[in-house]
Image 1 (cartoon, rainbow, N blue to C red):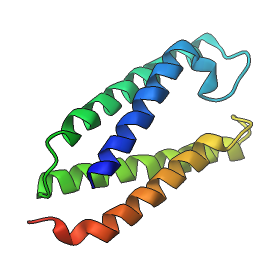
Image 2 (cartoon, helix red, strand yellow; image 1 turned 90 degrees about the horizontal axis):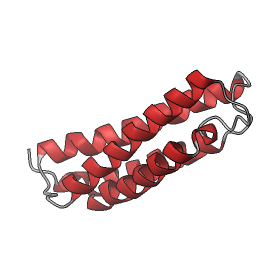
Image 3 (spheres, rainbow, N blue to C red; image 1 turned 180 degrees about the vertical axis):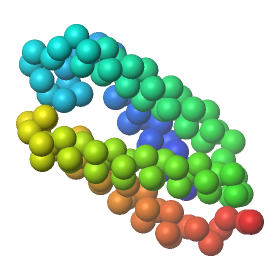
Image 4 (cartoon, rainbow, N blue to C red; image 1 turned 90 degrees about the vertical axis):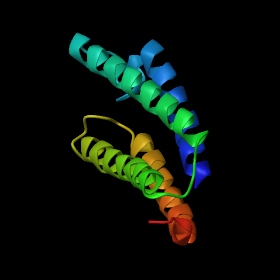
Length: 123
């Protein structure tokens, strides 16, 4: 379970860092509007902070109710982002479904890890 938090930390820290310096990568738009750049950078800041928080939390990981909920939030985050990015792809707002595939894959891998180890949580 700690691996879920650590993998999420690495992915989100890297994504946040990249989006701060290349905000056009969020939707793969070569000529984004100013508002798109602002929102992409804001998302980059949030992703970077989310990654830092999960990294810090992973250092103290124990099988209890709080960590169970944190892990379920991480899984849900990736699942919902995958659905949203896929909807943007279907609307031709972004030309590539790569981010949707990445987030859906992460959600799937994380849910498998969770299901394999969920009996270890003490309530």
